[in-house]
Image 1 (cartoon, one colour):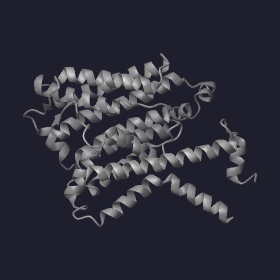
Image 2: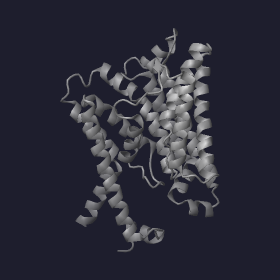
Image 3: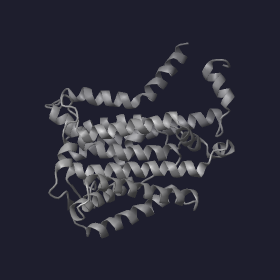
Image 4: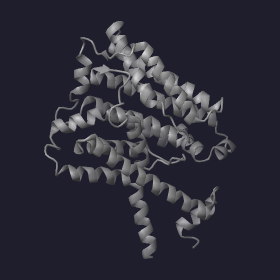
Length: 341
């Protein structure tokens, strides 16, 4: 009885490890001067919003059983185009943001087609797409930084507070709303359920009549939309964009990947939650505020990633050893329900 109770507690802790990680960071913040000031909270959450957009897309594709490594370069290119269209072509901000989002959708469609129709491994396709996006970004900007221009209206709005008495930037609140919309899609729509099924077992999903190729393409499209839209908004929020964005310090892509793993998204597909990733990325944003030096940030985040990867690998090995590569669902259900010892 005690052993069963211990296993249940361990499973509960593992399932909620992203929340425990955030709580640990917030407790550490009690010992840091000026950590809980409204200005610091607003700055930390605002500056960490781009990585949340990247983590959102990366999580969805990972649940579908693939990997989208283009999100960082895609967001950078979207930011460059958004700022360039407004500063040079004098297009309204809303039109520029829509163009940035469309760039992300187009990139997602291309990635999805490469993976599903041409049967190119997502890792290889991502590397090629990364180089294409970075090359196009250099051609568009001539390698120079593109600034916001003279219109700071939207920049001030995104940096300001949407709700006066809550110390959160408008950019972060928009990011949070989008996260919850995608969470609802994944939990309560057929597409969301199909994404989990395809990632869990593509062959079984196909036998169940699910159009796996369409589902995978849609996962890449949502990822591209998140990266493109988040990049465009981040360009306005920051006031400038360059091809080398995110190349100093810890890459936003690696922070997004780390948050996915810490949050509990299965690197083999089929299991995960954008909320887990969201909470983990908020924790990492506050962790960066606590660890002032880049070296310490890299060490702590890297250590957390390694520990979670080791745990997931050992846990998967133990599961495979007990139930095999293709689990007997009825037997597993009986054991969990206590029907069969």
